[in-house]
Length: 200
Image (cartoon, rainbow, N blue to C red; front, side, top):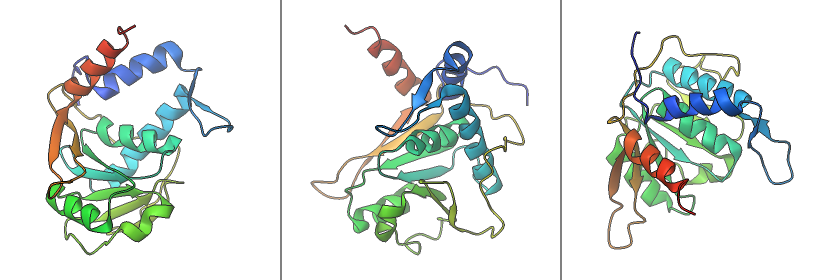
């Protein structure tokens, strides 16, 4: 697909980072061996490919309920690189809050770390089709029984991602009722990140 991506999108800025700093360290556990941006970019593309095979399309919501780990970032970018919308959930959300957000966001997929699986009720929403374990990207469940993560895989087509596309829906903690979602575009987040670099 021929498409000139806008500057202020995650895939556009990330590719720029890879081209300039590909061999620099990107993500790591404390005390662990880091991966560089080149490797991170390969894994991100593999996640986009996995989601595509799972039937996730541009604009679809994919939740992210995970402990802090390098694969959190890989999953986040893998979702947004294909034009899907990431719905990050706080690990301390209650099972009821998780279910309410999955229903309200109409999430078709979820990345979830193994320790948080008890918070997931897979039957809470008939929209939820796929769950992937963030720790190693193994498939927890899916409508496609053959679905499997391949770290060498790449998306079958190029995704057109624009600045005004929704990148993320961030839900509040719901202290005065049910959580409320705030929609953020690629431009919203990228602009804030770029301006943040200039604050001394």
